[in-house]
Length: 408
Image 1: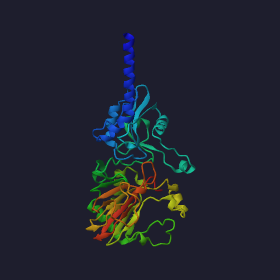
Image 2: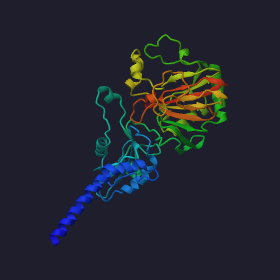
Image 3: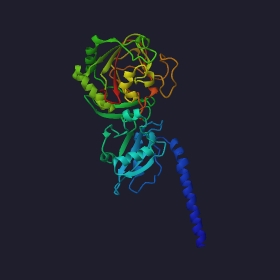
Image 4: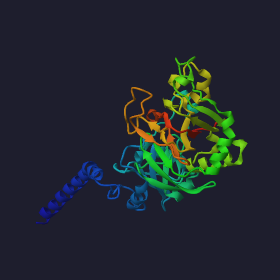
């Protein structure tokens, strides 16, 4: 009887183990995909030592994860130092809440940690000579946007962002998501709202003050001249007005302390140093004036006739990453900023079409923030955008471009 009972217990244990594995490998992801982000458990039990609290990690990570789409090049990590002098943690690959995290355990040194994460997260390392020379190293950040250099700051922070492109990008989470960004220079706290996940577009309703707008326009009006474009291969010799009919002035920040203060405010908002910014491009769009669809980054493949430009942008590894677009007037009709490929729409047949995609109406003091590069450091062709014709009124706006590397 004892042998029979023992055999029965073994069979039950094996069946239970098998179905537990089946649940974790096949059923759990399906269940998670059907749950709302608030209901989702976010993690499957992970074979770490007894020092790591997987449930606590899931709870901490939940507000930072998305169930909308993989965010290529972005990962959310929980990490802790154990009494046995090791590092343990879990990583949510591509910021997804709908896929089980991966576990890792390493020695307490930065080299071991980086090697473990590169393996677990399939982080691509430089292979070509150009990549080795110009590609930025992937980096750790706090969820507040602070770059984390030291190992001690990683396990003290507990929750860490990894960006394969080496620069901080706010996670979009989902359309309509709002977060407070505290302590902007001369302004205080602001609310950053996600308008679109692909391309990544945010809005801040009250980013500029009226007195700042007055100073910017006063300094710029007499200098406005027809806007130019960077001619791609095959377009040399054409008139810029084929694509763009506004007037423009690049306002040097040193001309006024208020402008320098806005530079700091932009840094506080996007968490990328001022050294990466261009001077603001002040723009005026009058009746019928527009800017056809374009990208703000420079695609290397389209500038093969411009070797100096290619060298200046490090063969594509240095580029415009963020556009902080200022609206400095209300417009009665037209003048929208349009993203014709929003949500993954195909390349439009016409670069003048203002009927499809995400459209943002001009609103005085508002800014939109959109990303021309993905978290993995690659250019995002979905960031195609344009300025629709002004139908009634005058549109005053500004481009503050932020690069992924220092400008000079």
